[in-house]
Image (cartoon, rainbow, N blue to C red):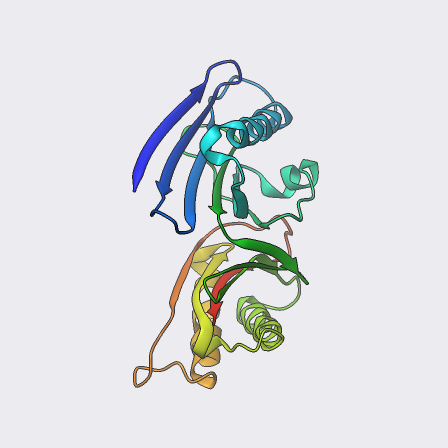
Length: 234
């Protein structure tokens, strides 16, 4: 692995890049794009982030690299998300977690080179070496309390996994839960997640998957929980 940093002065965007490039194997890239605050409205910073993404793909090392997922961090997701592009080439999540540098937006991109990538019914599938990597981000509900929404999200995801011949217990590696008003809503999410995992056979006698729950605000004010997932088949 090696790291680098690029600053495009003309647009005030910094790219922090981590590259995993084993010889003759799939290459992976993690990139964080930040904008330098310039006393402007959100749209100005958004356009600079989009321009940074475009310039990133023009770098020689990123030729033929395809995005797997993007996670945008916003300062006011409810009002800002409607102003953003609708993206379908990769799995996208948008969450309100204001960047610490005082800007209104940052984005984390994960890209690969050397794998076949397709969007299958909302699931982004990266296929190589006999494996299928399944990514699905930004899932949320808008009815019920945090426990109900968590249970509903997990059930819907489990049904989606079935269409790929997969299950939560056998194939899911990672989930991310972002919880609105985490001080009051976190308990409901944890309770519903634990009960669901037990039903799926995930216990201290079998195994657990990595599952993070942290504070974050979905754009839909009715959504108390937003979930992202990663699974592997093959």
